[in-house]
Length: 94
Image (cartoon, rainbow, N blue to C red):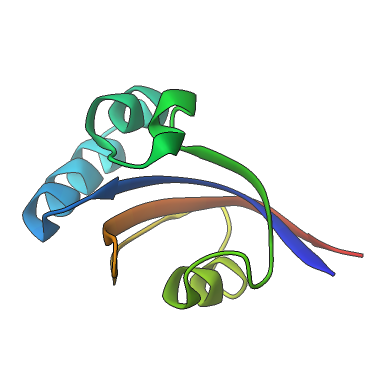
């Protein structure tokens, strides 16, 4: 079974997602940025989704989480919920 530890920020506008990405790449704190801007309930935890299993997330996000590079800021990625910025902390398979 594949699982991953993921954190993300979800916003409605692509422009805001791009602005937040640039701030994060310049060194802004992910936890605080998520708390201030994310519309996902995970914002209360600084964007931490915790451990997720393959197939548990929206398809476009799930595909990225289980194939993209770890410890890199990805996005903005569009889903039916809005635009996501996400980081895959690490993946495991057992």
